[in-house]
Image (cartoon, rainbow, N blue to C red):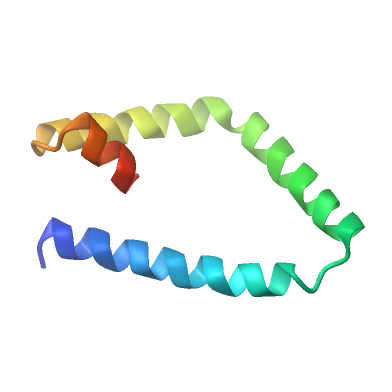
Length: 76
């Protein structure tokens, strides 16, 4: 399997999961949604350094494989 097929498969899987989560989220009350969003925000803020370091690794890996920055950003 080539990287392109793996990336496409990964994107499709993520899209399916997002659609499923989106449907479930619609059933929640506003207060529950807000609480969930706040928890997500806190988790992202707490892990922002790690996330940015891993993102940079992904960019570097993409450059090594010949991807342009623009393409790699879209794929990530």
